[in-house]
Length: 234
Image (cartoon, rainbow, N blue to C red; front, side, top):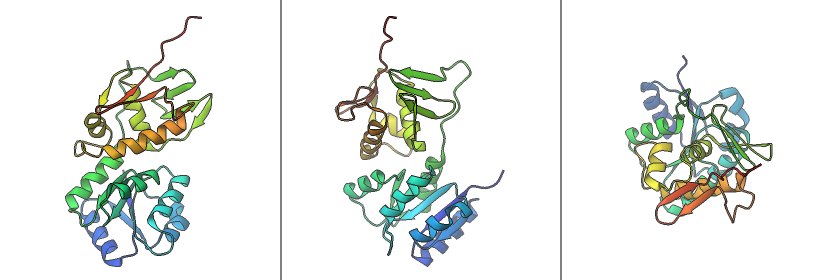
């Protein structure tokens, strides 16, 4: 099995060299791009499994690069930035990032975030339900596919993992911390803004009226609940 390849997009050569050396020691293959333009032009050739993206870059900035990457790929994207406000994090997540790490960071923290971003939900046991039909919404857990009115809806890996966990526990209020630790990893728990952004994104993609959700319901001060409609009598 080949080692996972990480694409580092950063205009600072010192940081690229440091990340390349450190990540190589832990078994990752590292490829580099010094700008968003270079990364977008060579993404297919580089074939990364995960992207580390600096937020502050000349030319095409980090947010614009993130949006462009998300339009053409479903790879995990982790933002690296000196900015630490909730608004900056929300903007990055809205742009399509899976996670946000503030500089300066410890390498163990970054490695944990990389492992969490690359983690995929385990395949369900044979006796578990594989498909959920909820009104016009269909979720195929095995194929990791979602459709609304028979139209395939493209979700990012983290969006699907969040929807999957909620849908596998229908009609239950799932606390924020439980959602974060299950979908992102045990290192998480306080990043409630992550859930806000991802749930809003899911609503735009699967709800008939995102402003009046019928599937993804907010439980104030608690978490979120996936409503599985009762089957109607034929």
